[in-house]
Length: 246
Image (tube, rainbow, N blue to C red):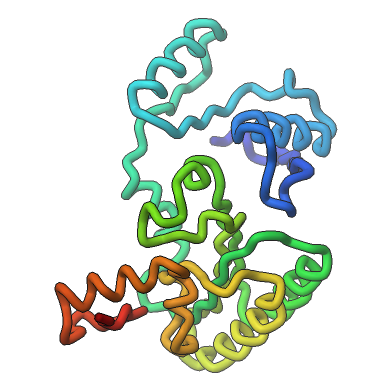
């Protein structure tokens, strides 16, 4: 690693015209390639100047075949770290940054569009974060999830473009109330631009009573009926609860 000391990193940001609208007539791969080219232009470099970086997500055999064909037609790389990554490993990528024992406060929404006014609100509240650990993520909802009917699974917010999470985080217990105040104010400022529900893992214990129902939408009644059949006494009621309903 010594040869990298003192080196400079060049960063480029690429986007397509659909990053705020969340819908596109083009397939995801085409949009990704357009964003990569835009990032190169933003960084002031040519795609030919990049030595290489590859990521592929699909069926295991398809990925192996595609990568083998790619490697066959390119010069031998200096190093090749390509390999299958199990889903639990992907889920654990953030673990080193967020060890056990931190203070957390969460707020979440599904987001369909990002108008300029909403972006301004995000920037303003991000600047007021009480600790440098606080964050807001927008996780894209697109691709395969759009090709499934809204009533095919319990989760039906398939017309959303992003799943937003606001997370107030601190290693200090004394910051707990400040995290809550910041998270609540941030969410209140941007919620009017968002959809009614949110990803249930991003909802905290102080949500309104109907937030879970709003998060599942029209599918909630079916879930409540199933709950009434298999858990009529609501034994499993921790976290974001679906109450039994006949």
